[in-house]
Amino acid sequence: MDNTEENAIQLHGDEEIIEVIDLNDTEPGPNDLADDLEDVDFEDAGNADDDNEGWETEDEMEAEAEQDDSELTFSRHTGSVFCVTLDPATNSMAVTGGEDDKAYVWRVSDGEVLLECTGHKDSVTCAVFSHDSSLVASGDMSGMIKVWKVETKEEIWSFEVGDLEWLEWHPCAPVLLAGTNDGSVWMWKIPAGDCKTFQSPACQATSGKVLPDGKRAVVGYEDGTVRVWDLKQGNSIHVIKGQDGHQGALTCLACNKDGSLVLTGSVDGSAKLINTTTGKVVGAFSVEGGKAKGSKDEEESNSVESVGFCNILPLIAVAYLDGTLAIYDLSTQVLRHRCQHEAGIVHLQWEDSSSVVSTCCLDGALRLWDARSGNMVSEYRGHTAEILDFTINREATLAVTASGDNQAKVFCLQRPDR
Image (cartoon, rainbow, N blue to C red; front, side):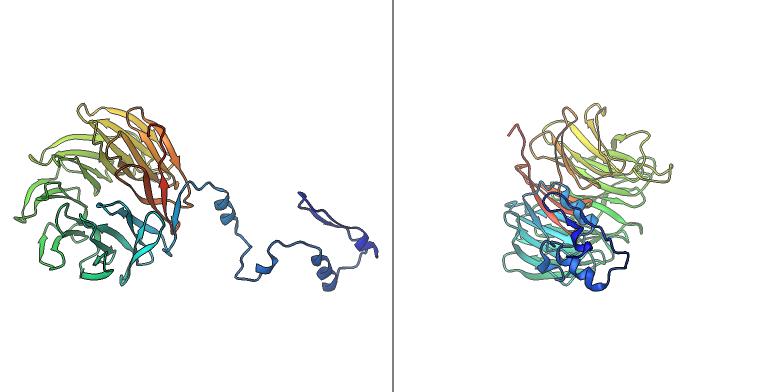
């Protein structure tokens, strides 16, 4: 045994140091190195050359160390997942749309794919079930819209419009509405394809919602205007603009249970409450002094990203890009609570029959807040990138999230009061 080998000490067990003391001054040749490597214990050496398995980047290792609270991960998408909705009839199916130009309908209980929606030319940013869950519509950014029959897995209708902003089914009929970036709102009977368009000045129809009566739709535009349309007659009943309207593009809107009130949010940093019968603005809400988290421009206003009404108490929620979730009293319009997030909020949703409001965030977490106290009830993690959309089932027992990490996840929502 020569000096080198005598002094090559290999420490096993918990120690991770391999110390080689070379007493010969000569440079080790390739053969010596090979001998030394024979003593090193590579874990899973069999996979070492198999597609780089076994080697991890720092990011992957960090991600692995993070907690994952989800019950199930859907990972068929090969790009960011932009949107997710649950089927309204049973809440047992989810549809997700992604950057990979595809939408998937899959079972929430086990992640099994029930339908793969192909043939899109661009990222699928809208994917929604019809009121009875028999049909699913998928829409991509370029304006290609397809409708699929879930049971038979066949495409039954398709149409191309201008660049698509939003897509929504009628609440009680097989009628589909879409808003585009040239300001048009389209409405089709499916699968017959009978079509009606609602024209307005050439600026994006950025958000839209059919009211619960099924006879009117509220549409928000890039110039800050809000229009209430009569779906049957094809005319606008109310136009809210100028000083009454927003001073920047609409980002979101929501209506209360009976459709008498609509809440709108805009990049101008304000939310407005509109009476849909009179077309009058009956409330305005903003959080003073906020600006987008991470924004370099001090002047940049704090955009409203999501809004919603509580079903059981006279409360509304407004989510801002600076990470503020504001809870307001609807009757007095007083700010009740500010729930602060570490990063910008993307989307909020109230539970159907409680005072709990959930948020998803650019930091990849889903959080539940009690609007009565303003306290966080629980937080769920598992995504390694921002959550871009989420939805909660009727019973508020599970949430399905869509993320920039190419995954959708199902989280079981546990709460002490259930």
